Image 1 (tube, rainbow, N blue to C red):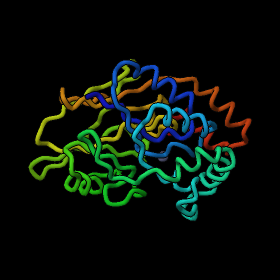
Image 2: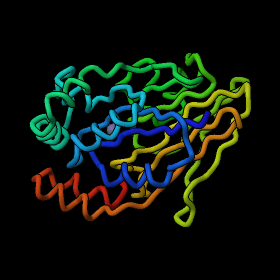
Image 3: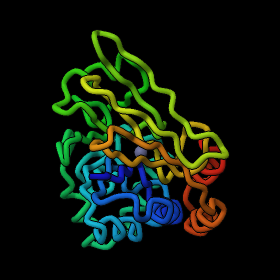
Image 4: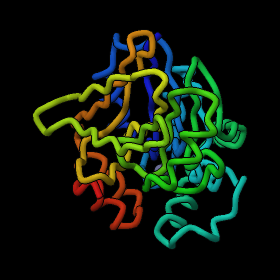
Amino acid sequence: MRILVLSDLHANVTALDAVLEAAQGRWEQSVCLGDVVGYGPDPNEVTARLRKLGTQTIRGNHDKAVAGVMPTDDFNPVAKAAVDWTRAQLTPEHLSWLAALPPGPLATDGIVLVHGAFQDEDEYVFTPAQALDGLLDSTAEVTFFGHTHHQGGFSYQDSRLEVLQIHPRPTESFAALRIEAPRRYLLNPGSIGQPRDGDPRAAFAIADLDHQTVEFWRVSYDISSVQERMRQARLPEPLVQRLMLGR
Ligand code: ZN
C-alpha cells in the first residue's frame, strides 16, 4: 500500500492543495504527523481537508496549544500570537477535532508516526544522538517524525547510525530512498506549510513499503498569495517573510 505522509501543514491551504494535486493517484492511505494549524492563515480550510480525506492524524505541539490541551508558556511571542489568532478563527467543531487528536507514537499500516521525538512528542530530533531512541525503540522498521520542518532522516544497522541527506534538487520533484531490511529508519517528510531546510517548496513523502521505497517530494506553490492572506489577517511579519526563504 502506498501511504501519503503529511506533516507540519501549519494552516497553509495553498501549499496543501499543491501537495494533493502533485500526489494525486499515487497513494491509497494518508497519515499526518501533526501541526495541522498554527502560523498560517487557513486553519479551518486545512482542518477540513484532512477530515474530508480521513487522514490518520496525530497531534503536534501547535494543535495542542490551539486546542488548549497544553499551555503556551514555552512558545515564543510570535508563535503565541499565531496560536491566539488561530484559536479565535477555528470553528468549535474543528477545535474539538484538534483537541481529540491522539499523541504519537502511533502504529498504523506497518509504520509508526511521531510528531517530535519517540519518547517525547514535543522534543526536536536534529542530531544522530537525538534520533537514536526512535531508531532503537520504535515497533516498526520505518518511523516517520516531523516537528523540525527539515526533510531527511536517519538509518541504523549493526550499531551504526547514518544521516540521510535526501533533498530533491530544484529541478526535481522527488528523490527516492530504498528501504533495506533489517535496517531501521527514522524519516522526516519535511513541512508542507512552513519549510525550514532552505527549500521553500512544500515537502511531503510517499511510502511504498511493499516495494521498499520512500519518495521525498517537493512541490512549488503560490507563496505570495499565502503571504497576502497572512498580512490581511495581521499575523506576525517574521512568519510571513520566512515562507519565501524556506527558513
Ligand atoms: Zn511544526
